Image (cartoon, rainbow, N blue to C red; front, side, top):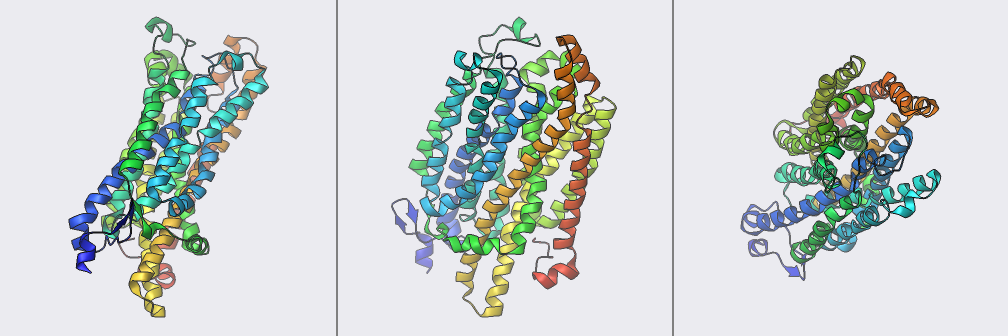
Amino acid sequence: MAAVSAAPSRRGRWIDDWEPENEEFWESTGKRIARKNLAFSIFAEHLGFSIWVIWTIVVINLGNAGLTLSLSEQFILIAVPNLIGSFLRIPYTFAVPYFGGRAWTAISASLLLIPVALLAFVVPSGWLAAQSPDTQLWVLLVCAATAGFGGGNFSSSMSNISFFYPEGKKGLALGLNAAGGNLGVAVAQLLVPLVIIIGVSGAAVSAPVHEVNLQYAGYLFMPFIALAVFCAWRYMDSLTQAKADKSSYVKALTEPQTWVMSLLYIGTFGSFIGYSFALPLLIKNTFPEFLAANPFIATYLAGLGFVGALIGSVARPLGGWLSDRWGGARVTLACFVGMAVFTGVAIVGVNTRDFALFFGSFMVIFVLSGAGNGSTYRMIPSIFGALGRKEAAEQGLDRKATTVEFKRRAAAVIGIAGAIGAFGGFLIQVALRQASLGVSAAVTAAEGTAAKAQVAFEQSDWSVPALWLFFGAYVVFAGMTWFFYLRRSFATKRVPSLASASI
């Protein structure tokens, strides 16, 4: 067995023997292969997130491109890719067992060429500008929907990488993989505003309405996508062990822990991606006076919306690292409590017209949601590892085979929770859109540009009802975390070892 562990057997780019829990194997061979696959997985996933959220910047510049939409219609445009990406996470997770991690990473990366091509050649075209407002909206919706391809990459990437690492190193590895992907949000929101004004004079871009080149946003990512496809196909591997059958997913769906963790992931990742999509538009329509007084921030930095995604992404591996030491449930509970508190602070910022207080509170929420992303995903393999040990002990099953089976279920749960959690981001868009309907109607009814701007300013607290809803949700999620994973009298009876520090 030691000889087999030292050199995994291969069939093409498939690896048949993979034993990351074997220390000799891990140190001699496994670690190098796992790190290589992690690096290229991060690159492809990073681009997926960039494309997924690219419309958050496109939407706030549509007026500059001559395409005028109401605030509620703008929220629809950023909600659609969020929704499509959420649904795609389930089939993307199934794709890894079917195609293998290497092939599917290449395929999923190549699909990103569709949304960037539409953004480059259709959205800024003279043909679209000449269409009726209704036609423009539908075309934009179709183009935005294809950006959802980028949202599916996360689940397949996380599911694939989870097989490469031993239990004790999954938290940091999955955190790095997710953080590298999540950083794509910040990169897109930072670079795209700069790219689309290339060739436009500095004097022009300082004006509230100015020329933009939306097609450049599509051109920007094309060569990187091609490079990601090549690297995945040339350098990545697929694990035979990861070729789970459908029964793993069916069994995962029947396990109550799957649904508990999926709901908790709505609160962590749903918040991260939901606010990442919404914050540029939220800032623009909540603090127009701040952006008007700071045209550099408004134009070149898209209202600082990218900062939240940046620090939330960096915080994700921190959440996994802390969970490896103090337990994922404890970290998750702390994150939800903090998110509730600072949502309350954000409400105060809106009501007092204090941009610094509002923005600072959202930055803390991003840190906590990012750390919560890492802690909840760290909990999943730990929970299913405990369930596997329990079943093997109670039914006298082979421990190694049972461990592999429950690893497959955990990988399935990562895909399921990833999809449901991302759907939480869509719910944030829906809540904010509903809150915006009143101000959208009032602005539409006003006559003249100055009157519309005045109405928008007078109703700039439109988001407060939605923020109170989010506050209540975090309180509920905190209660769930305590009830299911930290209340020992319950957890130790239902799932042995789940109340331990490792969870």
